[in-house]
Amino acid sequence: MKKRWWHNSVAYQVYPKSFLDTNNDGIGDLRGITEKLDYLHELGIDVLWISPFFKSPMKDNGYDISDYKEIDPIFGTMRDFDEMLEKANQLGIRILVDLVVNHTSDEHDWFEESRQSKDNPKRDWYIWKDGKQPNNWRSCFGGSVWEYDEKTDSSYFHYFHKGQPCLNWENKEVRDTIFEMINWWLDKGIGGFRVDAIEVIKKTRLDENFEVDAADGLASAYPGCRLVKGIELFLSEMAEKTFNQYDIMTIAEADIRIEDQELWTGPNGFFDMAFQFKSSKLDTELGFWHRPRTFDLLEYKEAIASEQYPLNDQTWAAVWLENHDVPRSITKYLGNDSPLEAHKMLGASYFFLRGTPFIYQGQEIGMRNIRYSSIVQYDDIASIDQYDRAIEEGYTNEQALGFVYNRSRDNTRYPMQWDNSKNYGFSKTDPWLEINTEFPEITVENALKDQSSLLYFYKDMISLRKSEEFKELFSYGTFEMILDKDPSIFAYLRIYDDKKVLVINNFTDRLVLLNLDYKVNKVLLNNIENDDININEIRPYQSLVLDVE
Ligand code: NOJ
Ligand code: CA
Image 1 (cartoon, rainbow, N blue to C red):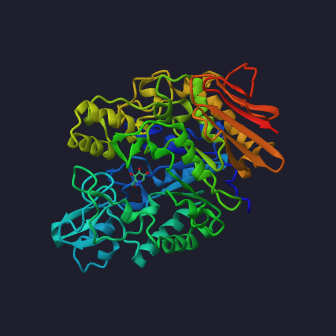
Image 2: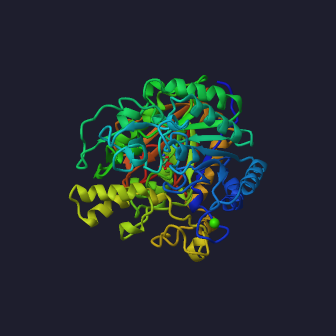
Image 3: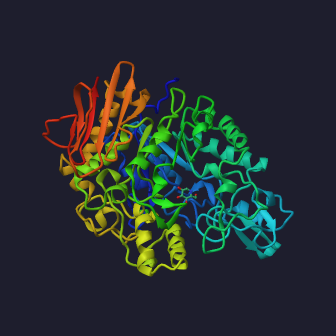
């Protein structure tokens, strides 16, 4: 396999609004990121994905862009960006920008023009149909995918919020303009892109009604938008005209089909890797938060294996536990009262999988979900919509808030907990989203003072992945799950040439006896201190990374 600079990287995601506020207006900013680059460098991070910071009315916190080439004033200026980029590059940290090209904001000039008249030159840049509700599809954040516009007695299509009209990728001018914008950013020297919602850029069956699936009388739009045949043409054109001209790293946000791994991430693939959702979306039915499902380790392992096994020496993956769209992993998989060993184990369970590991801000110190007492305290549009839907389905306020607590995107969006001062050092002013007062002891400051903290465990995991002795194995080694029918243990082998590493994780609070036949050469990592390890007696929540034969 051709070697790439990012093959041994460990990436970190920043949600800029909530990372660090340096001018005390209550909102995180680019200078805040620059200030914390040393912290990230110290941790061992060498790729940084930053969620959108472009000009935006912030209906979906920046995933609704009104100018792709401007920094939103709440985050700072282009000079701040250039300074951040320069310092990052000096530290050997490559910056990945969030590329949001399925849609723009409804306040983007292109859309303002498009809505003026049916014969406006930009009319076809978006998806318009005559009349009020051309079909019964539901948008991601609730309500119809169609928004009626009186001015021309027609409706525009929005897969996400009505403030996020979908661009019409069938239009060549649209594609060319996007490609030009992509290259404009690449020429600035960024390290690449995380590519938002790219699996839904092509639409089909827009004239059809789908079978109603909930009390709102609508149907999910996903089948008409996800991985529609022909999307390959757009994606290969994009790769050819932009990404392939640079030595960068790209990650598609896309639940690609297992059989498409090579097409998407192979040597001539559209991207380098993808963020997939097969294991993360098991906690609800069809994405309805009021239809929760209980965690089942066997099902979880199967989902992970289904993403790992298709990988070969031509393809790549991204592995992750948290991002700005999902709950905190400790709350989700272990419960808030679980012990520190369990948090380390959860980290190790995904960190040594095949692919590039991503850490989301605050994950490294064990931040948990946030409990707001009223729906008005939430900012996330998905939370508000899912709350309303639960009420519509007949649940009480308390029940609906319970669903939102488990699933809200604000769980990962409330301010980062840096130190023990006011607002955890995030800002001197009241932040844009209320802080979490439930876990005041969880701060970077405390973690740095304690050698046994989760933060140091993450640091150890990163060093191990990058160690001279094992970096080839963790980058290029094959994946093989063992004990796949064991309901308590999640274990796998990574194998490269004559080297073998075994990762064993006990997801329960009980001692688990095994019957394994490996000779242990060396203990590379053990989350339980001063423990005489026995490969066939795995302590509660124990995690072992072992060099074996
Ligand atoms: C996926 C992003 O991660 C999410 O935060 C956003 O709401 C949608 N795409 C729409 O851009
Ligand atoms: Ca600020």
